[in-house]
Image (tube, rainbow, N blue to C red; front, side, top):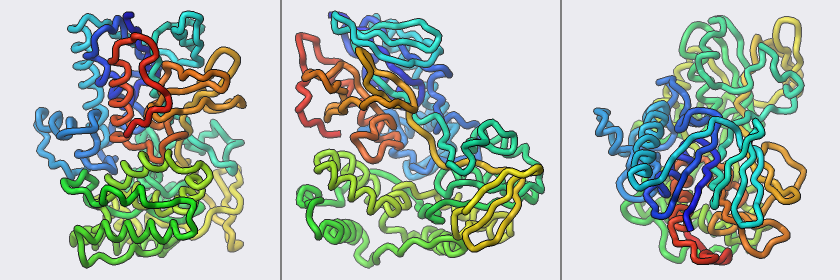
Length: 488
């Protein structure tokens, strides 16, 4: 049976999916459905050289295993970089776009037609012959034997305090494109809602020029940690049974997890000490300064286990009882977010410089009220003080498009009141009323229902490799039992 593949999405995850199916035999057609150009998603669609990846070249690759394909691309294009380097994000967008063209040509050479429909997919219908019809926003449809859902996080999350002001010219619903922030008056006072990666981007852009005063605020009042690299280790930091020995239902789980992580760090750095507790507000800036100093001195021992920890969490947590997994993730969310999503040393030094110069500060608390006034915004803080701002920038993350079950179809969107399909270990979905899984796979950030850390190109590439291997198999019946445990 010839196969017709429909890939929904056009960012890095979709390009990685194409990479893993483009050379497979028996594929008649591959159709990508995405409203924008292929390769430039939310994360890597920027053109601003100020904005860096927070992952090193080694793990920022469309192919998860072997030598970094991104490193090879950069070398071939004359960029003198090391596998540990953090490069501008626009280079990843260019890499994805270039590789898309090459994968498309490779497929064509094998007799597979590759097309791109510039429209948004809104639903997936299963037909009587076990093929699928993907419904588009303009009313058109495209059919396929297999559907690969790679739609990423694209709609900004608006906090409740400002959600009623969507479309207001003094409310910037995302830090991107950065050029919009650069056009703000040089003396503007700007409140940034958020303190993680996109908020750091906003702070760097806003503080770079002029005399703008920028305030970052978030419920945690905590900045990311600082690192000088994020790479795969040649030698594993954990023993073969370390993760399997953890019992998430045990009262001693947190203690056992902490001890295991510290042992892993000390294998490579015998004198390493425990991580410091987080610090908020002005203390967050002092801690950032201290961590930047330690990074410059090469004293960030925890950074060399992070890539392995991410892989392990994505593999192990789906095996835990759902309630225990949710509890562990909730308890350790702040710590995980701070160290897994750490920022490059260069960004940390720039933030410290801006704070020292009085252009930037981190608020110790989240606003009690944000009120629109005739000239801007009036912010009331929990201590009773108030402050005026000219603009508010939302940097509170993005909502991923998700699948919800409806009669005879899967709906695609950010909202939906129907149940979500079950996401199985092999990344296929199964509808509530069917024993057999669909030939519909979910990859990248949309796979957050199963894997805890998905906003990471290496994880998306691992997903693509698992899915590509299944699609490449001959269709001589149902070939992949849903209960089969697939290691990502």
